[in-house]
Length: 286
Image 1 (cartoon, rainbow, N blue to C red):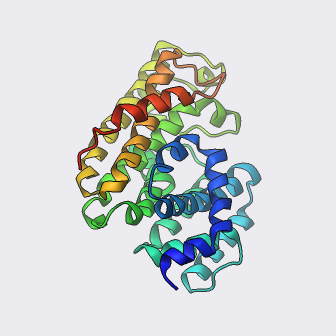
Image 2: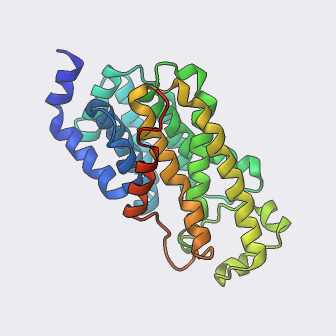
């Protein structure tokens, strides 16, 4: 059976994955739904796998279920595909594209780090964590988006790290509520931001300077990640650029809202996303 026929055969499973990304990541869906259908479906399946792990850790906080997911991944690698929609869709993706299984394991390692959470002490520890939970996802997506993956692995890692740092800066209040602080301790000390300051939900000048130090580093990573565009397949350049621009827009959005990451979850509006997508339509170099 041709690979394309496999996508049709597993339409129900891919539809299941699409609903997951639609519900949980409107930004990624707005960007990657622009891809040709089977590439878009492949991204949805990869996202659904990541979401499965996220839910086990963030909602259920279940170490046993996470270990079961490790075991399912090992079974999948061995050719024993679990009879569940996400795995059945991923089987098609692995047949269609030259996928690498290692980033899938790495992402689960990152989820285990969240389950056994310890606040990072240094930038290096934060960067390592960001690779495992997000840089790994960039590597998962590469074979769908590029024929020259070996040449752009560092760029994909940078993009994943930038997006994770953006998540961290957006979710400071939410993470604090569940007992997680991803801001490195040494950076908090450097900018004289205490745990008590965070618990009081004070947007002080010191807090803004700490936040900006991380945000500006993330913005540099976004810029560096653009160096991979010439190596991305032509039909994937605009969707990937859309994802980068929409996600990066969260940082100026938070600035426009006076850095209030404690009282509401900041988001880029649907209208703004569409505006950003329109700005790059026709301007992506072929």
